[in-house]
Image (cartoon, rainbow, N blue to C red; front, side, top):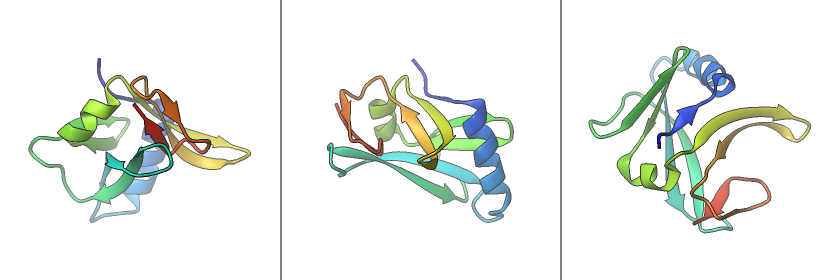
Length: 107
């Protein structure tokens, strides 16, 4: 199973990184914390590390470190713009529970 980026997410990432000449890559990682145990972190970075998973789509580049990959296997990174607001959403089949806002999860 692999980690994927939807077309909506790729389009939004490309828009954001186009404005950041020194940080053209979106790094997605998993850290301990949040109300459910783990939380997603999104950072704009200048380059990828040698051991990163690199996902490219529609002019967007997303990198994920090997430790975070194990917590995101089979996940889909999406971008949602609804009444609550616009945000990146990770649909993660490894997660057994998540908080109400969707930014933290448990396995």
